[in-house]
Image (cartoon, rainbow, N blue to C red):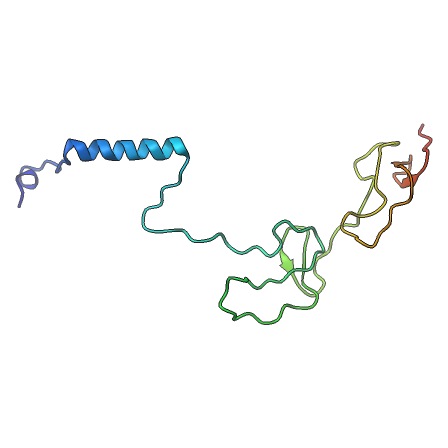
Length: 140
């Protein structure tokens, strides 16, 4: 048994080791690096709807998996909360081109998520009823 344990004192590390640990901690704190003791945390969890809008088709199978995924459901889509749901459960709010806008504010009649929609020619603006129309708008 060491003399430190017999006397009830905590064992001490040499001064060089203590300063090395302090320097390492300060360096990590200053560089913003995350220090993980005990291993690598691994990749972030798979999110099939990351960066996708509501109603966009999705595949809930993680492409990093070992191929144990069944075929994706034919109607899987991202919902309003960013979850990949199937069976038509992705109830998305309808596109509102004048939602939150005032009369005569510029608007786009086509939903940005609808690649088949064609905007009417010329500038469009919100009318007093909250409808996006092409051409001049008369506001009260």
